[in-house]
Image (cartoon, rainbow, N blue to C red):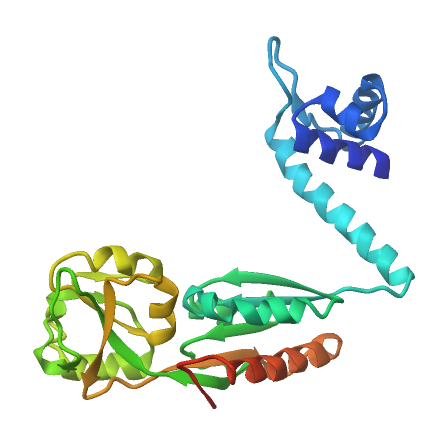
Length: 296
């Protein structure tokens, strides 16, 4: 497949204009049109909609689908050229739950700053991350809980205590809160793992419904504006809110700490083994510098 035609098509997608594509590539508009027509003939599909009176370039469904293939083809060509020059950028696929991405973003900055590495970071629930590892769709998982898998090894990285979070403006929880005095009907509930769930059911009536169950911590500050509402979270997430109206209270008895695990395949690919082990080593070193967590 002609690389010039692919590059032209990707420019058309970017600019939505044959004229602007010609200007960007320093070629004539007729050359752009000829390359597009040639590409459509080779693929035997219609890539753009040529309806009368149509302003700008509108892709057909096939055109949108082919755009993704064209991007991958271009990226593969780049990687092959890098490989032939001995200038290979290694790709590491990481899958993490969203609540563990925000306050370790400094780690990714440091890791990428060393060069020769490209990271693909995706956020999913723990069960999906384990499935991705089993199907070799990702290289590393970072989760707050684990499910049994013969293929996946879970390495505990750190633990962090949990606190009660509330809004000073609408609630008056003391600095030390007795867990059994809490009403689950006031709780914005987030599942912090098996140990937390067991503790929670002992301390609060499991038959009562929480105010809300959520799988994203981004919603919590807004919901805490409801009088007497509370949530149980790690201090690291509280600090990321940067909200002076929010406060932490210690809970008695203390809930078990949240544990962060690094997940990897028990039998690593030889091609990625060294890179994964290096990621694990540097991740552990970085965690030692993070406040409010205890490295394991």
